[in-house]
Length: 244
Ligand code: BEZ
Image (cartoon, rainbow, N blue to C red; front, side, top):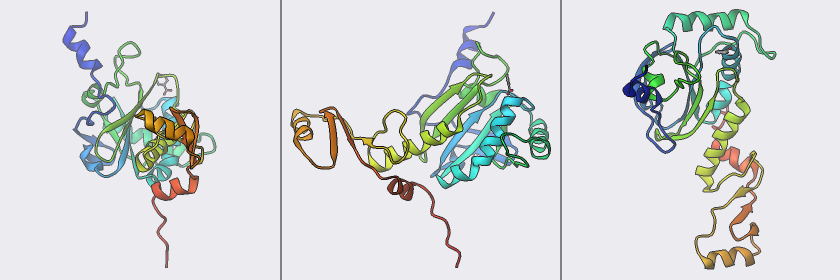
């Protein structure tokens, strides 16, 4: 029978708006101090159940393939599973040498993969969900901003591979919200109209309904405006270095 202390230990997790818990860990790219090593950048910390498993393999190939796209959006990737360093190294070598998925092959995983055999990090980040597995991390995705604050969390069960379009879309949507002080509606992609914050007074509500400027208001609390895709991407994505 699980003690209350054990139960609490496996169910703690940072929440949106919290500072990302700090840890130091051994990874396939050397030791990292998280999140301090990533100050000034976004970082996605994600867990997977185990090395040498098929869904995880498909995810690693996909994430590694997209790494440069995330990097252009000033976002680094850090993976974790409850496996040892040598298992991680052997698995990543196998992925590069032998596995093809969705037309992607010879994929080298260059981002760090944390060894967490003691489950210290997994427990701190609530990646162990005992109803699903007591020994394997679920597929958690933590989005941490350049100030080290947890901004979004997505969880998937063991059997469900993640949607990487959604992970990228969520990152760009949060960066857009920060940069332009707007919100993004359901199923938003860059180029779609954005939402401006609801009117906070009767006067502003009236203004919103009568003004004919850049806003489109369905009602006083539901106003959108255009925000051009290029304007967003220019503001968010790193510029290519021009070779002279
Ligand atoms: C997988 O990655 O294939 C997997 C891992 C744990 C449970 C089910 C599937």
